[in-house]
Each structure stands twice: as structure tokens, then as C-alpha cells.
Image (cartoon, rainbow, N blue to C red; front, side):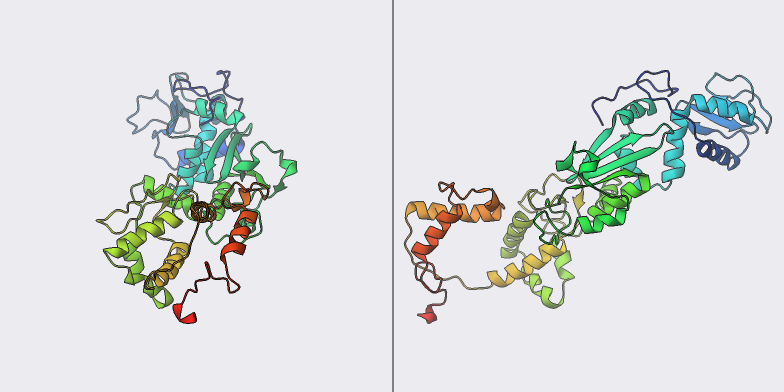
Length: 403
């Protein structure tokens, strides 16, 4: 929630609070109220924040003043007698924030599921009053979702509008970015990173920027986020509801067949250590924005931390399975002993090169910075010194039979 939000007591949410924007009651919101009352029994109240409305009072358990079936009753003590439809419109217009808030979530968003939960989470609708949220929305509520920055704002009709962009583009004017309005356009934006390389893992922290969806409605926001980060909202919601179905490593590997069936050879014991290495290599925050919830099996946790991502990872993904297949084959090789000489500085340089490649820091090392072990010129010097004409380190072939 934006820091500029000011809290108010419950009750009526309207323009009397200086922090709450003036909201016009749109005709479609008022019509939706009438339709909702038609769906209720006479006297059964339709509840908003701080008050309720009923058509007639027959059969109601509410302590409402009397009224005929053709009259409306407002339950907050301000209207002691029944109201006509025109009176009701006037009364609801005075309470437009509460009415439009009900309309947005009950009629525009509708279904009780991941989309509704996500949209309500953005503005903390389950924890803050309408007045507090509308004041915050007037200033703009910002939320992070992976590498996305989502900004929610409010129109003078109580409608929500959303700006979605890369977090690195926060504060950049819309006209300086490539603007889109169709959620399906996001499919092209997530295909390649900023260097034009294909992104096989959509939750990798390599999303390119330079674009914006500046004016999305609630449904379009959800579709855009789910296109950029598939199933993340759905799994986040399942976790919140206590319904996240986690498939651990062993049960996932048991389903592999064909060329991936070899991964099943990593069984308990030594295989457990291998899976730790896989998780450390692939599932760190620097490599994936998800938070790993799967372990070795139901009874055995991995030693590697699962990360801090906002959305959970419920099973080893295809990238992990593909990498594990390759590593399974590599780990099946028998170890050999190779002998070659390195100076202490050269040993440390080899270690620095491996670290820099593993952490993706090669591009950060300047060519002139030769004190860095993974510096390109320094590494080329080491290769010139230690590799023979066949590319063997220390002149030692990989296969002794090649000698």
C-alpha cells in the first residue's frame, strides 16, 4: 500500500474526508444495485461498507424502519423512512465510494478466485477501509510482482485503472516507452531478454524493459500479468487458500520417460546430494523469481534455501528437468586424476572465472580491469599460457588414450 494512504474509521466513505477523492456514481453501478436487490427477498439487505440497503422490510431480521415493497430503506440511521428510487439514487450518490467499490469487485471483477484475490491484494482491500484505499488510489498504489511494477489508480467514477511496466522503467514517461493495450502483446515482450537471447524460463530475472501497458482495466491487468508470468497468480492464490498442490522431486522424476527417464537413476543417498546441487544451481533468487516449495520428497527437505519470491514454485520445471538430465549423464562418468601446474594466483583466477560465469557477471567486468580474475584479456593470457594447440589445459588430454 502506498505510504501516502491515510486511514479513517469505518462507516460512511465519502467526499467529506479531505483525503478521499470526489466520486460520481455511474448509472451502471446504480443499475447493478437495483438488479442485486431484485435478486434478494423483500427486506433482505444488500450490504456495503458502513451501511446496507433493502427493498421493503417484510421478513427481514434487520432492525430497519418500515417500508412498502416499492420503497427502499437505508440502514445507517440517516433515512428514517422509506425512499423512492430517485431518493435511493441520491442517497447512494452521497456514498459513491462504497457503492462503486462494491460494484467493481462484485460486478466488474465478479468470481471469487485468483483474479479477484489478486486485484484486492493490490489495494489491500481485505485490510483497509474504502476511504483509506480510495485516498491511496488517488495518489497511486504501487505493487511489485517479480520484475513488474503495477500502479493502481482511480477514475472519478470509481473505476480502477492499472499501469504495468518493468520495474527499471519506474518514473519514465509513457511517451518514452512502447505502449500496448492488448494483454496478448505481452507474449512477444517476454520471449527475449534485452540482448535478444531466448528466455526459456519466463520467471527468470531477465525480463527486458522499455514497454508499458498504461491504461488497463481489472480483467486486462490479470491477463497481462499471467501472460508475462504464467500461472504465478493462480499458484499464489492456491497457496493463500491452503490448496497449493506441491509435487516434490522424486514424484516428478517418476513421471519422466523417454530421454528424460535417465534422471530417475538419481535415487536416495548420493542422488539426494545431486538434487541439492540442482536446486542451488537453478532455483536461487538470482536465477528464478519463484520461491521453491518442492523438496526431495514428502519426508526429506533439501539443504538449499528455497528463495524469497512472491509466488511459489510447486514442482521442478522443465528447465530444471532438462538440466538435471544432462547432469545425470555427466555425473555417471568415472573420475580421473589429471596433473598440471598452476601458480597460486592462477588457481584463484580459475575459481574467479567459474564464479563470474555462474553468477552471470562476465558483462560487468571491464576490459581494462585486469585485476579481476575473470577479465577477458587476463583470461585470454591464461589460455595462451596453459593451453596447447589442441586446446588441452596444461597440455594434458582429457582421454589418456589420446596421448
